[in-house]
Image (cartoon, rainbow, N blue to C red):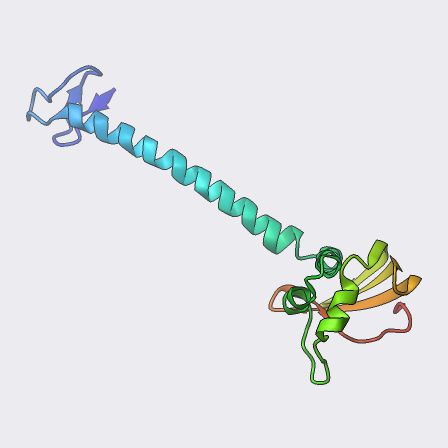
Length: 162
């Protein structure tokens, strides 16, 4: 059963006006359908935003994914971008010069994350790297979580912490 939104009297489905108060029921049906048309795109946008949030702040914000993204940028020659996005700038850290930057592009032939250990807001990764410049070697990478984002800490580590 439906009721007139103005006076509360019972109305039929196909009535154009309320018999009791004369309320325009045609425009009421039009407003309801326009609300539905408006809500569908809004729901789609919300789902897309939720997906983007998940990807950028949950999926891509793991220590392993940060290292993968960092290596990918280095390999494309986007060294400054990689450093700005994924590294903590400490006091003695020096940005690479143009000649050093050129050596990074395409230098990493392959890599494999062997181990990962997360302890609170710190993470440690053992990465096997095969590069043109240094051949096959093992790198130990420390990451620190700052304001919810994993960042690479530029510290030379000799071994994987146990």
